[in-house]
Each structure stands twice: as C-alpha cells, then as structure tokens.
Image (cartoon, rainbow, N blue to C red):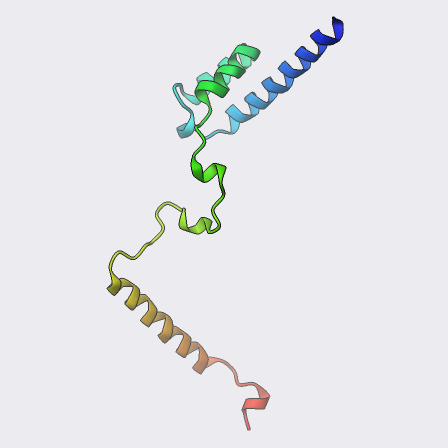
Length: 115
C-alpha cells in the first residue's frame, strides 16, 4: 500500500511540475478562461486539482497547424505577402530579372572567361 501512495505522489508531482512550467511559458494571449497569473496561482496553490483544471480549461487549444507540421511553414506565417492580382506578380518578377541581370554584369570574370 505504501508503494501505491508513493507512486500517486510521484505522478502528482510530475503533473504539477509540468503544468507549472506549461502555465508559465504559455503566452498571456493564449490562456483560456482566466488571466495567466490566475492560472499560475491556481496551479501553484492546488497542485492536483489546479493541474487538471489547467489542462482541461486553461491550456491553449491545439490547432491543426500545431498537430500536423506544414511542409512549408513560411506559407502559414501571419502577415505573409500573397499576391492578389496578377499585376503584382509580374512587377515582382520583372524586378527580379532586372536585379539578376545587374548582378551578372557586375560579377567578376573568371580567368577562363577573360580570353
């Protein structure tokens, strides 16, 4: 019986430490239902009940982007420029071609190309 109570105590301690660390490192804007400081105090003052409450009601909800990493995370970035009209793409491509041509003209010649 003593081993069972020690195991329960160890599981509670590990859960409590995980939830304290998780609550402290979660950004303020992502905490649900209560402010972050309230969640930290609840988890610190009520180790078992506070930890379970944090996991159920306070921890940020997992989004699909968090559960399945994208092959191209730069496309998921908020505020990323996405052309909405074809003229924007054409202008960008024209500038890229001009810049590439200028870099080719300014590049130093290799010894084999000079003759």
